[in-house]
Image (spheres, rainbow, N blue to C red):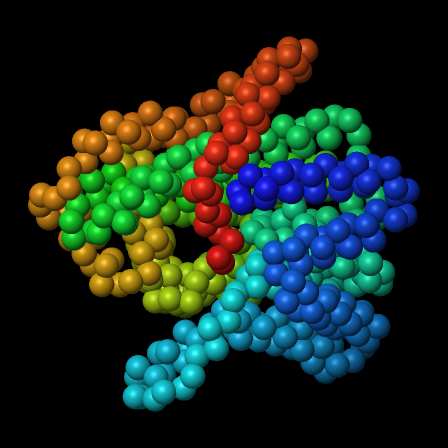
Length: 460
């Protein structure tokens, strides 16, 4: 099953890229739209209509705004329709059962759950299309009159399912004027394979350790094994998501698009403030531009600023999943950011480099506990294991099995190897080709042979 899926994916990409380079420029966006819809429908055929509705609603709302600039009420209504549709669709599929379950528990009700399958990438593409309508309303960009171009933007398959969140303003020029040259294709292939290696060879490798720890049961493991397990997740989620982002960016380059960077070595940060400028950068940018700054951002009094942070991070956590652990994870970071803004960053972290790195890694580990375990009772059990220094299943067996991949993950989570690779001159092309080829062969071999291949951010 895994082998056939891998073969299908690579055949799909090869055929799409081959045809894309052959067809005339004027047909490229239509081809991308149709191909992306096929790609999306392959994973979620029953939700094809939702994608079409998303395109039509935001396309129409933005055109109404563009053509009626003098009618503020109509523009406002059109914007509200777009926001209501996007958030309503997100609420219905992602959060309906969460609220029903909470109301049932609070008031002793028995409202039936829908148990709907979450449409792939809904958290990403609803934010993308909503930002487009907001930007048109603000006058930051003109409405796209060509529905084919707009549809291609919404459905662009490399980043459709798990980001990065690409705003219309990021690629609106490239939608009509892009050109693809050999150097760009080469760079795109290189970037894609590097992302594939991060995902398959690193994220999957360390992820198996975290899965084993979960399967053992948190109450049965020793304190050292608990720390080893959450450290594995610390690396897994980073290489999983950054790997997919690089694959999307690489495919975008091959198609002539420059998608925004999504990660910038976040684990070398020295504060939570810096961490969130480096981690999932497109999501952080979205919340900052469309929520935090309109609320007043840092330009308001301290109490109001802290309220803004709490609201933004409550919603950031909730965006990731319809469970209380995600809300707690968001509020955890809100508390850290408030503490840092109150003076801890300026007076302590900025003055003590070694301590600030240790602080960031420790706090990130604590945050990932909340993020990775949805059962709050098990969250409590795991935190207890981390700090109770109690016995249990020994960690040495797992350390011996995973030590090498953990060390590699630690090194690759810093910019050391990347900077070395970037210094290899283009003239020494055979060195770069050899490295990329080895990574590709190893990744494909792993995919063909292994059954463990989760994409963590597909569920968001």
